[in-house]
Structure formats: C-alpha cells, structure tokens
Length: 125
Image 1: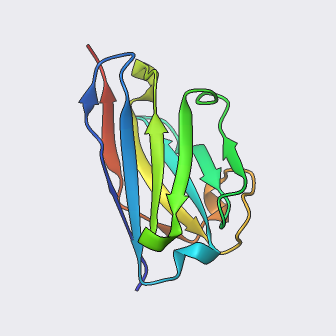
Image 2: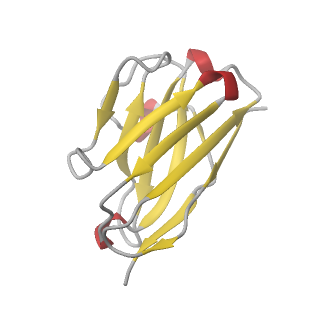
C-alpha cells in the first residue's frame, strides 16, 4: 500500500524558513518523480516543485523560483522542500505526490498517482 507522509509544517514569520519532509513507503520511491503541491483556502491546488527520479532535474512554479529548493534522499525514501524567504501568500496545505513516470511533467495534479495528506504552512506575523 502506497503511503506518503508529510511533516515540517508550522507557523513562521514572513522572511523565515521551513523545511518540509515527505517519507514514502509501500513502493520504491527511487523510480518515481516526486512533486510538491500546495492549496490555499478557497484556491485551487498549485504545483510548487518536482524532482526527477534520480534528482538530476528539478522544476519550480514561477511563484517560488529562487526561494524554494527540492531535494531527495532515495536511500531514506524521503523528499524535502526547503522554503526560504517565506511570504504570507505561501500559506496553505502542502502535499507531496508521486509520479510513476520518473521525469517531471508540467506540475499538473493529474500527472501524479499517489498523494499524502498534507502539512499546514502558515506565514504570518
């Protein structure tokens, strides 16, 4: 049974940093591209970042480029999202997702096969 469990969400002040983690179980994560998405209240889910199966290539949404960094440790079946220079508009529930195809697509929800339950990130003073 596939399972993705996110952690690391918190309340942080604008300009602060957080690192999210997502641990995969029930499948061999090393063969899958891994994505991060977020959903703010009243808004659609938005693609944040993706990393290919081996970590050689990454993709970011325009709103987070230069501030967020995605990485992975296949030995630990874990993918990370380092978030710096956080803004109030980064507030939302952050989800990780697994894509059977090992390469990143267009950061669309329908490209991913399995999802975690999400972790809340709140950026506020």
